[in-house]
Length: 201
Image (cartoon, rainbow, N blue to C red; front, side, top):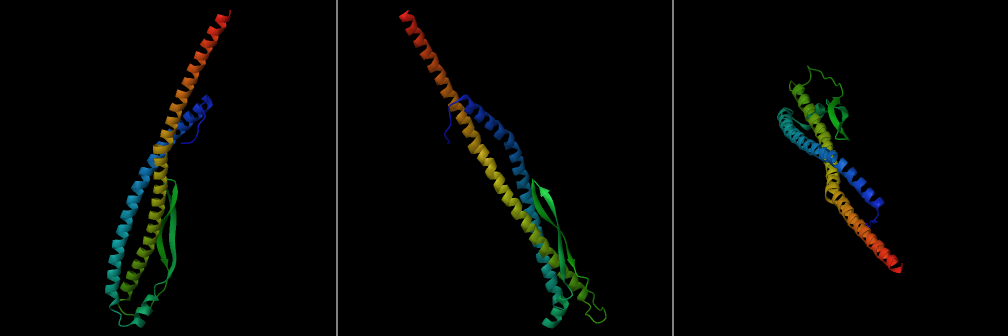
């Protein structure tokens, strides 16, 4: 515990600090609750994305069997080219997090007469798989940012609840006792001085 002065000025300073901590604490507690909920939602979205990615990869593996060799597969994968991963941002509980919008693919056309009939399905399956993977990376980033902010906010709530507020209350109590003792002592001294002065007269 920090050293304090036993004065009325210090008492007022401690009381002001206590009021400030008590004013900010409910806001921090509300932010903590909101972040806990957002972290839960973020985990649910990540889990759903993982399941969708697994399903998309199974589907992709199912359509890739139509290609006879690595050269054919290479020709097919050349039909899918990621140009941009579009994201935006949103504000949750005072922090900015990225939001996945879509994957923009290059507009590559192929000859329907010279390519195998299953090319369309394979291109769609690969695009879906790549989109889900890109979304998963953004969701992971969201989760990490929310979790870091929740950790910081929880530490602040604990600091206020378990350290700062009890410390201020204890300091105020000690100052009141000391000031009371000093006042009692001053009254006693003044009575003694009065008695002595009366005896001298």
